[in-house]
Length: 142
Image (cartoon, rainbow, N blue to C red; front, top):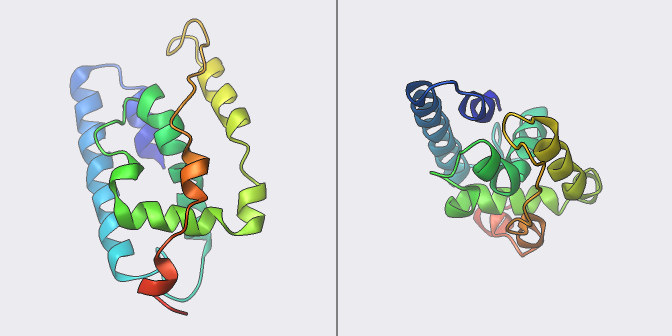
């Protein structure tokens, strides 16, 4: 969760690269875990860790890839993580908690040093992608 901020607010190239390397390492770890089990801590139960992770991942391709320069490993390139996001987003209570326009407006207008003109990009449409069918129940039936 903190890795994206370390990238986005890095004050030097070396600090950015160190943060980006660490972030990519942890994204790879998440991808590996999700290739072996349905949820981040368990194959049977969603935990607080899943909710916290999802709230970062839902913002990743739509905001962090552009705003915090975390474009070397978009979530869309991680098949297990992407399908995990799809599954969690399709839980009605989680889906209702996501207002992507609010998220984008907040990030892209809150830090003038990162976006002087407060231009909010159109974005890739992550929520439309997260609405597509996922394969988590086939891989890991409950």
